[in-house]
Length: 142
Image (cartoon, rainbow, N blue to C red; front, side, top):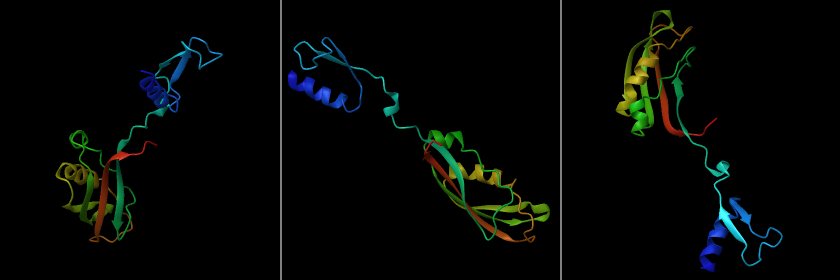
């Protein structure tokens, strides 16, 4: 019994999660009891959040690049990965002829829809751009 109690105490003490009852002046006194309390919520690892990042845009970076929203179905299924694609810069700084080259299927539509709103001003019309957007399920909380 004492071995189990001692083991439980050893696990609780480093975490700072115990409170003493009975004789506070002598913790080793017979009858001194400890109870485990879940008081330190800070010991839990911070929850990670899904994130979306532009990894590459070559040979030119976009002037405006609203990133896609992480699709709910992909988050629920824990789908992550890189979506690579290419397109041409058209008139008025717009993107045209967007083509997905590779990436998880559940993420592709979100990329295609977002890239329609990208702008490449000052880039010659007809210039081909190759880009990659990363979807990560476990990004550190900011």
